[in-house]
Length: 248
Image (cartoon, rainbow, N blue to C red; front, top):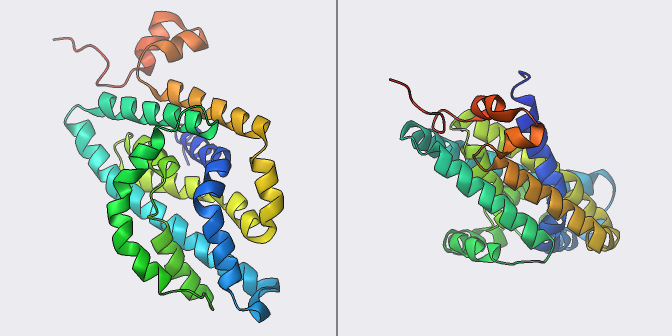
């Protein structure tokens, strides 16, 4: 991996980790239900781990597929000169996500409603896979649950696609999904303790502020260079091609 891409992948991983509180709210109940649907004799040891891993790998594969799809559209947007617009939307969604994590503003739930139409068609198929009795069945269920309407996923997806590369977007969404893995695995195994930790006010506000700062950083403009103290020359260097003036 090149030095230029490493910060992007670290950011995607951090977004998955920081969004743990939201993951608990959206998928924590599903993980609990999944665990309880496993026959009692299989709800222990390596069998439980295989099923939980299968579910989460299916979910993460859906994120990667969405990243490839939307990233291809992001490439088209870049080609049409709309890269700045895409980055602006991504930054605003990140800020909205941070406000939502801290319980300061819940406007992001309106965006989640946009995905409910698709989910209505997928949910019946997901329910047919319960109870989960094998890792392949868990993998299929996870692949469907990955399309559950989620503001955190949508925000990260728009950010990943704003780079205008379908393969890169898929990789970033895969990394983001891996970032959510510790929280959701722990939810399946130690649900009550994890809920207490992630509902702690300080934990939620700290995560929210970090996501908001990243959203501000994502927004196009000279503020990134100002924050780094590089002056006007740095501002020009950090602009995207769409933001830079064209000289004839």
